[in-house]
Image (cartoon, helix red, strand yellow):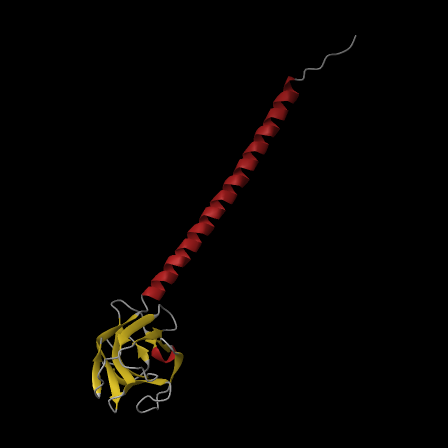
Length: 187
């Protein structure tokens, strides 16, 4: 006569192993999902911080933009005062790139502190107000910039773009007046 074995315990052991396997797989899956969520949150946070730092390092024009005329035929330079926007971070103006654009020209204007006035495709900081002597535009300070422009023709629009090392481009859209005086307010 054969002995019969009771398989009930073996079936319970198999069920326990399968249950543990499901728990391990679920734990690994939840770890991966949480890790992906934390990664996404971190990247979103980096984007927000980068956006805030770029937006907060903007500058603004304080007052009017003036065109300096030469002999009543064309503009040679434009001058304007820049300051930090409210809550803005300091801007190193020496690292700023200025470009001049009209319907026929697109020129990068280089920084030259010794040019007096700014000539031959250059720009300079002409005066500093409430400043401490460096070229870092900090909150409360204002710098008067003198930019040489490429002989714009009367009644034509032009743009001067100010691009700080960090932050958005600040475009200055103006039109050369039909009659050019020695000093002109540009609109």
